[in-house]
Amino acid sequence: MLDRDGEPDRPLFPTRRGGALTTSAVALLLDKHVASASNARASLRGKRVTPHVLRHTNAMLLRAENIDILTIALWLGHESTKSPEIYLHADNKLKQQAIDRGAPTGTPPGRHQPPDTLLAFLERL
Image (cartoon, rainbow, N blue to C red):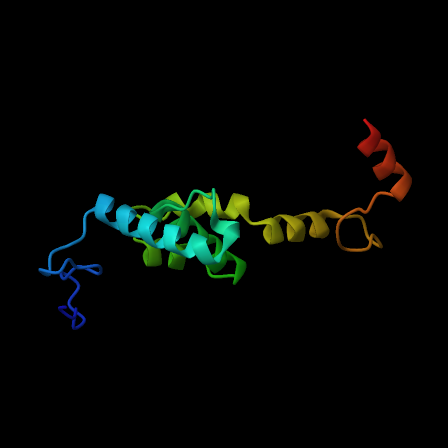
């Protein structure tokens, strides 16, 4: 197998002959390994795991570690720095921080916990 040796023009995922893997080849390899992993991990069975899912998961994990959007855009090779802004809208920690900042003074931080009677009522509906 050829090594990239830090050369940006060499493919990150090369074929046996050193060329770049196609998108469908990456998807086929991923399907093969997910099927194999499903034998050991029942939780994977029936889940849709695609290269895009892995990419999105990577971006969400980077956001969860407070990595800025521009770094994520560069890391994932986005054409525009606007593309990864979707991850800002999906980050629940950021949403909770914004809600906490807008709460009236003296309000305890965190999410509202309804009383058990309300939950019981809602479950009966």
